[in-house]
Picture 1: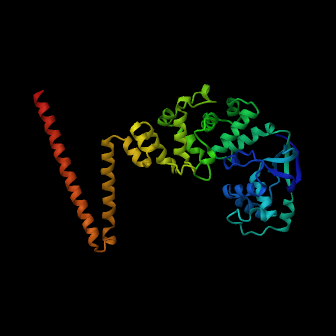
Picture 2: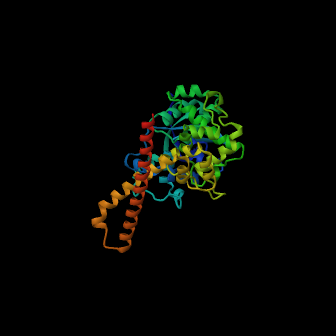
Length: 375
């Protein structure tokens, strides 16, 4: 991009409601400027930019990228790159924009000189969004100012659909050698397929935002792929979910993101170990039934595991817990009779378990010895 840098009044510059980072917050052309500033402030660390501007002013060598587009039949200068910086400037010049929205405003003094500078900001005006997509895409997908996975997927989808650019070309232009572009797009299409079939509604999720990385990561697990009928081959990139598994896809997405209307909380709290456990659950019909019946993920996961593995893990965990208790007892035990009785019960259980295991060991050893002799 080789364009002339201009100066424009802040009042002439408008937020981009199509911005991929705002897509997960249901921002539309009807959303007020105050709401957009509040969303950006609360979720995208705009306060850090305020502190930077207070110290050094607005960096003129990093102009906002602007396109002129009709919004509600009126032409506006839309900032398609730099919405966080625009939010910081507007918050400084109009503190009322964040009253009752932002948790806190940095306690900094903005000099009169900097305030004067902020009245007009450097911009580069492009003829269309298509002209700027390569620059913006590289910066935020593979470059130094990366977006979250959902914003990346939204932007890739916009480029692919609005500008009719093949995913392979997008990947090439962005320097993507790991099929990340294709994977992000397929993840978004999973959501869109489920919504089109009315088995999922992203506005109904239990949290305040959609953690798309949970879905994007989960689609790499074999158990998940089989359960929802996910086909990650290029020929199925637009419709990666088998029609026969669309209901299961809806269930899976609710397990990931929850549902306000149905008062269901997501079973995934953190990707590790929750996604691995969910993947194991989805491989076993009896474990899936347990999850459907409201059994917690960790218990459904136990159902999916072989009894031998559950026993071994429980035994090791019991040993670790006893070692920990033993290391603390000199300082932690104050002579309480109840805890002495608990320790006694533990000792009795351990002795009973050992006796049972010893008997079985002897029995199995004798069988092996007899078999060896007869052979």
